[in-house]
Image (cartoon, rainbow, N blue to C red; front, side, top):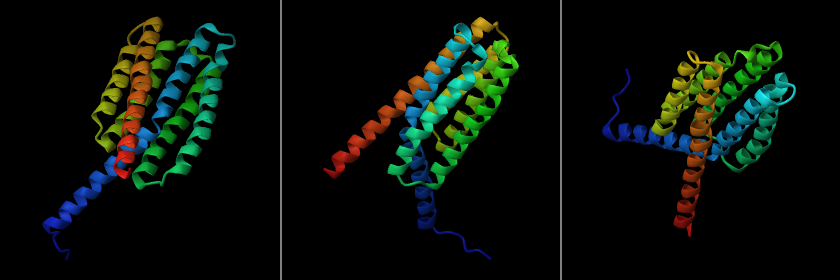
Amino acid sequence: MTQPMDENEVKAQLNLIESMIAQGRRTTERWSWAFVLWGVAYIIALAWSTWGPFPAFAWPATMLAAGFASWIIGSRVESEKAETTLGRAMGSLWLATAITMFVLFPALGFSGHMLEVHVFIAVACAILGLANGASAMMLRWKTQLACAIAWWAASALSSVVTGNVAVVIFLAAIFLCNIVFGIYAMTRESRGQRAKGAVHA
């Protein structure tokens, strides 16, 4: 029969959980450059597929380039910081999201189904909403949860509007949920680093 935990043990467990959540947020902030990178990549791919030559190659080529850049930069980031359990969980979540996109987007591009723009955008927004929502719930981060809600709203709206309107919705969601959120998280990390440096000074 297990012994009930006393008040100090409960507090210690709660402090551990809060510490893990805070560390998870810091990990996300450390990777916030990836939000900006992928936001720019989405915009490039969307513009290329709409106005550029060989539109079927736009998403596969851009996603591969962004993935390679993420791997190069990410390997340097991870080599500088110790890995945590929650950090590994977050990394696994975003890796699974990236793999899903790598499998889905090239298949849609080469099959020609990218021409159904509003359907593609609805699916992409739903995937990004899922990833951001799961991350936000694990980290108890209201700002990222707001981004998830925005992605889900964009997914729902894109399903019922024309292709041109869906593109505008997608661009707005990318700007707010990738670029603006990424810059916000980068700013938080920078402030945290300065505060940490001031403490150790």
